[in-house]
Length: 546
Image (cartoon, rainbow, N blue to C red; front, side, top):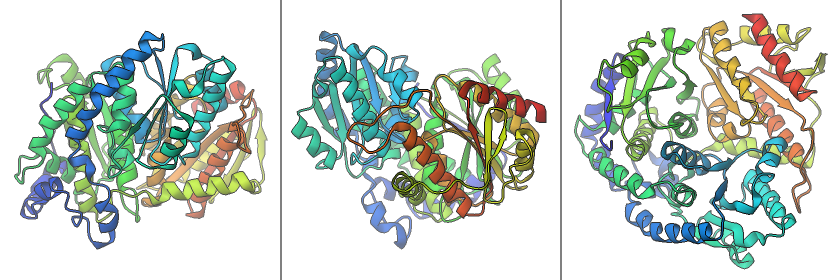
C-alpha cells in the first residue's frame, strides 16, 4: 500500500484548477526538490535556507538503520523492551503514529501533568529505555521529563545513563551534556530539518525502530512516493493537496480531518501539528479540526470548512467501510487521501510547504509557540496575579479574561462563552489534564460543536501548544477558548530545578491564556478544585446546555 491516493471535490477541485497551473509555471515542485529557499519570498529566505533538508534525507536516514537495529537487539538481550519517548511536537507525534500503525508499543511522554508523568515512571522502570528527543535540549517539558525519569532509574538502582538514548542536533547543548554523562547512545539528526518535518529523520526513526516498527519499509514507501511529488505537472498530488489546503477562494481555513477506514492510526494528530504550526501566522492560516465519524462538522455545510477523509485506498469504492464513511459527509467540498504511512508523511509535508507559499507566509517558523513559552517562563519566575475575580461553583473555580464572562455558575459561564464564538470563528477546548486516563473529557468536543454550529478543536495541554497553539495566537483572531486545569493529588519535583511539575503546567496554562487574552480573544478558565468531581461537573454542565 505504498501508492498515493488523492481525490478532490467541490471547492478543493476548483482550487486545483486555479492554483496548479501557476505552480507548474513557477516550477515549484522541482525547485522545492532542489531546495530552492527563495520560494517563500524574501522575508522567509533566511529560515527556509536552514530548513529544507527533509526533501533529501533518504540516504542519511537509511544509514541510521543498522545502528538502531543493533541497539534494539542489545537492549532486548538485557531485558529492556519498553521504550519511553520524551519529546514534544513533531518529535513525539511522528513516532506515536508510526508505532501505533505498526502495532508496536511506544510510551510517549509529552505531558507535564504530574498524574500522567507519575504513571509513566511508576510502571516497569526495570524494562525501560528512555529516548530523549530535542533539537537543542532546551525544551522545558522534555528536560523536566528526562530529569524525573532519570531519578526513577536511580531510585530503582539502575544507572540512568545506560538506559538513556539521545536524539538531537549535532553539537547541541544536549549532545554535549549527554556525551559527558556517557549515555547509552547519541543519534545526531539533520539540523536542516525542523521538528514538524522530521518524521523520517532520527527523530522519527530512532524511537520507532527501538520499539520494533518497520522503519525500513517506511522509508522505502516515502521515497517511492516522493518521486511523484517532484514533478512540475498537473497530476502531482502534492501540488493538488496544497491548492486545496491554501488556495480555495475564499479561503476555507478550517480543515476538518476524519478517519474514514484508514489503517493509519492517529495520522490526523500528526497532520494537525504540521499544518497548524506551519500556517497559523501573520493573521492567516489553516486550522485543522480532528473529528470522528458522524460528528457535527461533517454533517453541517459551513462556508469556511473543507473536509479531509483519510481512507484505505485498498478498499474498493462503494464498499461498506468506504461507503459508510462517505455517507456521513454532507458537504461536497471534500479531499480524500490514502496510501502507506511513509507516502502520507511526504505528501503532507510537501503540500504544507507549498500551501505556505500560496498563503504568503513562512511555513518553517513558529513565532507564537515561542511567545507562549516566554510567557510560561516568566510566570515560573514571577507568578502573575490571577486573572479576574473567581466564581466558585461546586468543585470548580471559574475565571475569565479577554472579554469572557464568569457568569453566576459553570453552566451560565459556558453559555456566555459559546455566545462569543464569532460567526466565522471556532471554539478551542484546552485541557491541562491526563490525556491517558481522563479521555472522557473529549466527549464535550462534538457536543459543543453541535451547540455552537461552529468547528471545535480539542487539545491536551501542553501538547497542543506545539500544534494548534500556534494558530490560536498567530492565525486570524476568531477563536473563543475554554481552558480546563486542575491540581494533582501528588506533585512531582523536577530534580535540580526550582519548580515542580504542578507549578510548570500551571505556568504553561496561565501563560497561554495571558497571550490569548492579550490578542482580545475570550478565555474562560475552569479550574477543577476536586479533580474527579470537577471533571464530572464539567461534563454535566455541557450536557445541561444541550
